[in-house]
Image 1 (cartoon, rainbow, N blue to C red):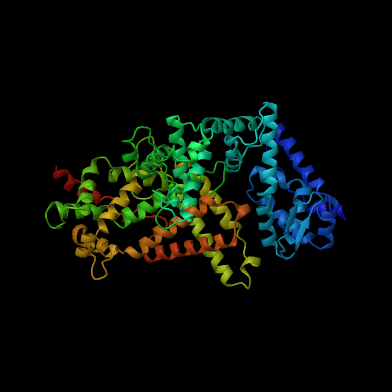
Image 2: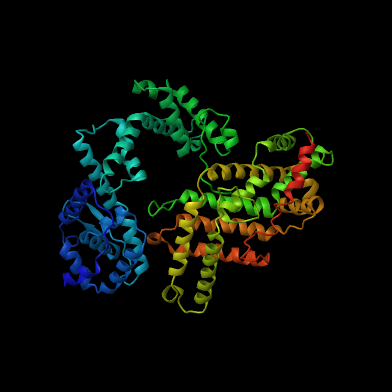
Length: 571
């Protein structure tokens, strides 16, 4: 009977040559599960249970899906061990607690044995927990043993090791494990016990708040990014905590508040490369998320590149097709000519800043060049060494077509999950992953970061109180301002609603593409993607845009030259 179960438990191993550390760690992980020898967890008895429950058909479906999915190498390696896979399957359907011989207790998920989707997700969730943690811990322990490095209990430097290990992971390919561990060790040795004290500093503030005491700063402002920035600054400053009692009594507090101030300063300007360039050592850290809205590391897929391309598409839709850049320019010219009477204050300062930075910002022609190179949108002229991404419009159209076909079939069937295949959508998504990972490269990241900051400044001007009062109509809507100024100053009729939908929902589609991993797609995320894609399709249809041109005509890029000429006269 167990031989039959073995046939449906065959998960394909990763197609890489394993490092000896990974091989030994896998064997130790297998023995860890083998040694949990009670009537539910031992290898043969777990298989027997699955067979007696009549689950072979269900397991076969789940195994086939796992083999076709984009599992990362560590998870695939762990599931290729039948004892681990069988135990996780058993855990997914068991109702109640499982008590092992070593007194550890694990609760079963109690999923219906015919629920392939639930069992599939349960296996993925659990293999990413204890098996992965144990495997990585064994692997790093083997390397530390060979280096004769002992982790001393109570040494605060090592408290962040587990977090770093889970966050960064370890490779399993031959020759890559030890260098990856060395990198982790370098981080630990460089930062020392500073991360521990940063966390303790924040915890002390939380304790005071809980006790009703006042604090200089609320603990909620200490985000992960801020705490890392504080750590970096304190390390750079060479701060060393030599007395635990002095730390507790607040002797070092001034250093931590100074570190917070520096971390906040970098965080505030890091979204705009122009501002960051004015700070020595400053780097941009924007994650390319936009107003309304994690990870594939194999096969050349770069989630950051895809998110950056999505942000670029958002900028193109809002900035160019809706003419927000042009409208902001027009408002500045109205203000310069005295037509828009804005008293001194925040709005006037924003208008003046927008005017003065115009020579430092990307020109309309430079933006058009980027749209054309990455998305093949607009009619921008490319340099001789640049190539337009001519495949993108076709691949995007393919994805939208597959979505429309899926929706059509699903609406005509009794059970979309049972009868309509998602494979065409998944393949179209993968094609876009590879395309955008390859094209959103080079200086494009900094360009799109700067252009998004430029767009936000333009929107800030348009939605300023004085502007909304003057041009926003009775509703004082930012979109009314855009439509009215575009009509009066640019001679262009702008239909903001479908363009806004195209930008926002389109960006959600880019997020789906970036986060896509076939092995971990949840039904809720798939349905959200379908909803966004459908909204995008409807918005495009309402604008009567030909998919073949994909926004190449009528984007208004040529109209920007005249607006730039007006600015040139104002010097």
